Image 1 (tube, one colour):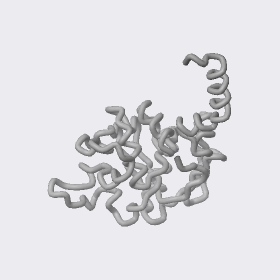
Image 2: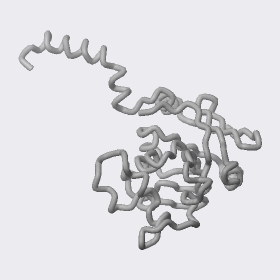
Image 3: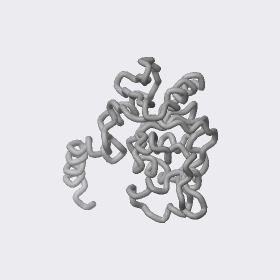
Image 4: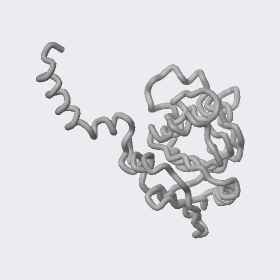
Amino acid sequence: MDKFTTLTGIAAPLPLRNIDTDMIIPKQFLKTIQRTGLGKSLFFEMRFDQDGKENPDFVLNKPAYRKAQILVTGENFGCGSSREHAPWALLDFGIRCVIAPDFADIFYNNCFQNGILPIKLPQSDVDKLLDDASRGANATITVDLDAQEIRGPDGGVIRFEIDPFRKHCLLNGLDNIGLTLEKTSAISVFETKAKTDRPWL
């Protein structure tokens, strides 16, 4: 998993409430267990019409936001089913940070396991960032995980809270497998001792 330290990128505004995982990545794209290739289907039913043509009004289809790395959105983001394909699709598109007033719990946890930083902020701060993000090509903000700060294009700073353990994992690029591999030496010692103590196993 890639480390998340400081991210400076375009922020796309998506001021909708209750965006569920089926809106993020519809069910017909869940046949794969690959984490790559899902970005093209992100927000499929909002990005494309029934003929597969792009909806020019959808934010990620607009030229200024095609390479957005930050998404500023509404409350209860990621609700619905627990599909891990949702953060996979966001990440494959290039989104590394999602900012909202709150998130569905399973989606929130899945983000951390996939190297995406989900930031919870009061609605007033989200509204400020939505305004910043509405500036199109000038909607560049910086997310500094170590300092726990978001710096806007006008120089304003918003502080955010994050669980210290999750912060440690993102800064060091550690998912559950990575955390386990950090204990490789202790695991080897345990296995060697177990073979000596219980050779019949």
